[in-house]
Structures are given as structure tokens and as C-alpha cells.
Length: 83
Image (cartoon, rainbow, N blue to C red; front, side, top):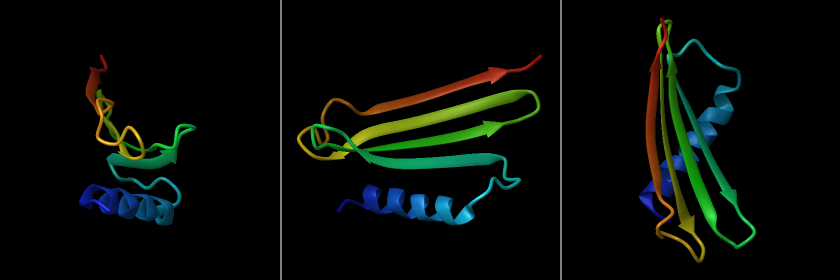
């Protein structure tokens, strides 16, 4: 098991224990899922919603299975400013 897998699993547990949304400015949403081809994928979203801006970062990768470590890694960052 990789260090990243341990970190994602820990985040999932902490997110579950946190339950309802709190007043934190940053929101972390980790997820691990298995597809029909036997790949286990991780997906982590980090968001911040402010009064005049939104920021969102995402990271996706297969962490086990036939396509593990393949070319399906995705990292994205987006943002917007509200007027």
C-alpha cells in the first residue's frame, strides 16, 4: 500500500467522522472507487468558496488494477471571481 493510499484513506475517515459541513473555509472531499475493469481509482477535490471568489483543485489517478499508474492521472485547478 502506497503512502498516498494511506493519506487518502485517512482523509476519507476524517471526512466521514466530520459529518455535517463545518464553518471551515476549505472543503476536502476524498473518494476511492472501483470500476468495472478492476481498477481502483482515487479522486480528491479541494474547494474554497469565498464571498467574491471560488477555487477548486482536483486530482485523479488509478491506484491499483490493470491501469495503475497509467496515463489516466489528472490534475486540475480552476477559479472564478464574483463581481
